[in-house]
Structure formats: C-alpha cells, structure tokens
Length: 197
Image 1: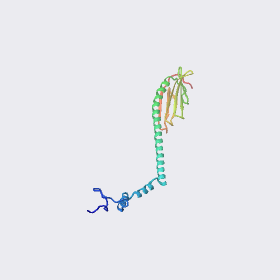
Image 2 (image 1 turned 135 degrees about the vertical axis):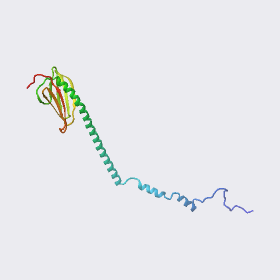
Image 3 (image 1 turned 45 degrees about the horizontal axis):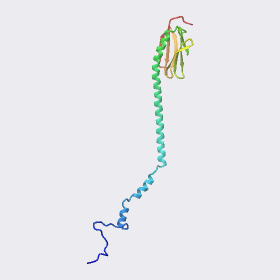
Image 4 (image 1 turned 180 degrees about the vertical axis):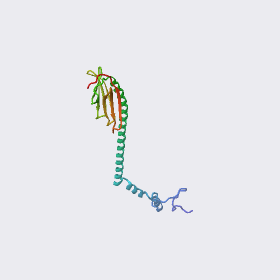
C-alpha cells in the first residue's frame, strides 16, 4: 500500500482558500471598497465654507434682521397710536359729563375766549381746567378753599387744539382735531347771574 507521507493534509468537508499571499485573495480584499480613498478625499474637500458663501449668508441674515426690526417698530407705533385714539374717544365723553356739571354750578363770568388755565368759580369751590400741549392732556382740578377735592386727567388726540369760551350763558369746549377739518364740541348751560365786564 502506497504511503501518504508526501501528500498535503486536507480536512474533509472544509473549503480551501488561498493564503494572504494568494493573488486572488489580495484582489478580493482590495476590491471590497474601491472608492474608499476617493470618498475620504471628497469629505476632506467638502468640510467648511468658502469666504464667498460666508459673506452671502451674513448679508442675507443682516437683511432679514433689518426688515424684522422695521416691521416690529411699525407695528408697535401703530399699536400706540391706535390705543391713544381709543383712549381719547373715551375721555371726550368723560370731559362732556364733567364740563356740563361744572357749567351748571358756575355763574356767568367774562364772555369770549378763555385763556388756559380756565377757572370756573362755584358757590363753595372752584374748578380749573388746564391744557398741556406737550402730552395732549386736559387736566381738571377741583378745589375747596386750600384743599384739592378732585383731579382728573383726560387724553386728547395728538395735534388737537382745545379752546374754551363763554357766550349767552353757554360754556363751550371746542377741540379742533389735527388738520382742522373736524372738531369735537361740548356745551354746558351756566347759572344765570350778573356778568362781569
């Protein structure tokens, strides 16, 4: 029987592969990811932004910021003016109630246009109306002797020109609005008495 000493040892049932030096194996290992080196170089080149891209981004952000601030300021100013208008319309009704009550307690004084501050004398007290053009407010202060009994502050539309006058036992407050095309007029009947000339 022939000897098997010179035959290579082969395990039954196990597939045989080439060694690391086998060209087939080397080819297989190298071809697993043929674009690996190319992708690494591409990633290295794509990292970061160019100066031009950075400048364009900053320019767009600046434009958006300026536009946002402008819009916010516009909305805020419109809101303030709208609130001022609503408050002044409410206050003109309050002025009407106070003025008519004050006129009914006031004896007729000098006729004609009255200069600010306007003092309306009553039997045991007096009421002073004063116009502050800087903040568009009309202030009503009632005093009895040296004591202030009541103070009211009324907001009028910006740019308005209030004027108070007396004629024929009638006390009139005319508020000329901005532009001069419209006026609010409040009238109150005064007590009949001896007029001062």
